[in-house]
Length: 336
Image (cartoon, rainbow, N blue to C red):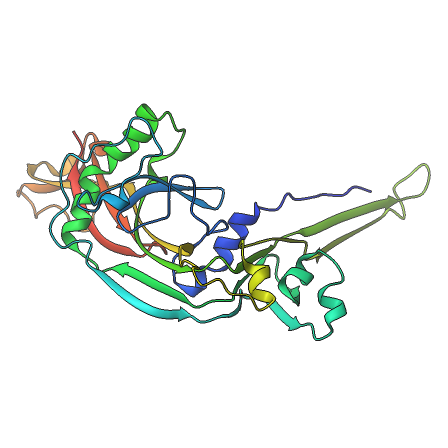
């Protein structure tokens, strides 16, 4: 008999992927501001273990957006085109409630003894959750959330594509961060609330496989093989909550509460994809032509050859994506 155990993904990965269907951006396992500062529109940075880490902000006209966490600081050489960070503000895209991903169901506890009985996730969330899928997530908001994002702008897309390689070079060569180019993103929007939230992730799938072989001594006659494969979702939970969640649960609400906790952030990402261009060459002999239907002319006529570039890796398709990797536009540039 043997057993196989699969290591589940990290809680922050389970949480963000499970809440993608809300289409509000990347769900942060750590909504509270990182040491580099509160996420702002125009930030360039990366996500590390569920928290957004700011490198710098492209908006040099707003001093409060400046990042002082890193040494040396990044110097923005080319100012942003005018008006590209114009924002669209939406109030209460998420009202106070429990937001569960697909496969997660909640049942509110009515007895106070059940709520205060222990320190597990059920007591903290004041609800019981069951996860019928291999992974799931829950976001609980005790206060309303507001959203802000920029309008789509072609000038901004071109700006990001033009400068993205310098941002990555700064992170690797100046700050010595071991980070991939596609991980460097620009914040284009956020959903923020007060520090009275709870996040939870479900993702412990246990799988077991067993087998046995029986046969007669001295031969294979009557050989019998049996096996079984079982998979069960145990629903192991990881959770964390905002600093003032328990205070709000008891009815206390501070007058100076700030809405600086980013439960979702929208990102603009750059990805490079190899583009093989085909070159049409007139006057090539038919003996040099690949089979492309009736690619060559008739008897006695010169044909037309279609061939790939000798160095196709010199040409990349550079695409700018929003949070859900939906193409926002395509710009082809020659890489020198």
